[in-house]
Image (tube, rainbow, N blue to C red; front, side, top):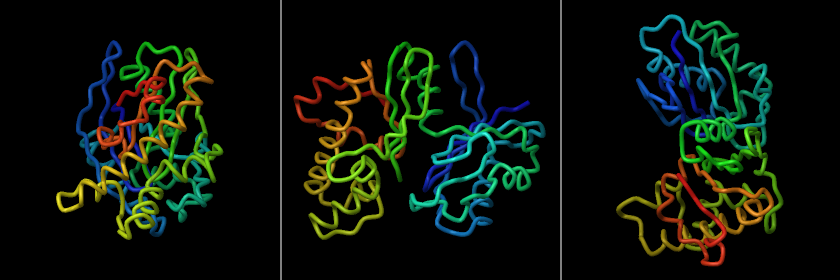
Length: 261
């Protein structure tokens, strides 16, 4: 039996064969790709299946563990996403059944977990938050995912809708914020964070944008770090890959927050 780990987001998918031994994880046959999830359901399922097949390779007996953003009926694999600007065409459909048919895999061999929850479980088992009693995990990308670990329990934090400033957390800590802020403050249109890191993008502007994002992130995290007595925060998601550019938090906040990626 081959174990295939799959991470699906609003604009990407990654998949790999997974090996586990004594809290050590081996990643084999890793593949990733960008996926436009604004299209029709068959197109989305086809794109996901094509990438997953690459990770499966020649194996005929497989189990898939899929990390998926919410809201979702994770037990039955049914998408409940309709207002997040992604995967709208899959709303109320059994993604488990659609993938099973596309990949010729038994539905009972496909398991879904909240993406941020899966992220923090993995990091606690063999990664950056290993050994932490209490920890907070955030996935920064198209949307904001969150998970909370208290002792040996990890659960979905559902902080994307948490009140923050003039709206909710996701208004300030996702890709949409970067687009909006860049347009409003500088009159520039970008698709996402990767545009800010392009060689021809003005570094003074990108530094100002990242600095503002870092301050917002620190302000948001501080209250939960204190409330949950967290020993650390683990950041994941595509935006976290640019972490070196926004870890310039306000000094008073940086004293309260430890970040690991």
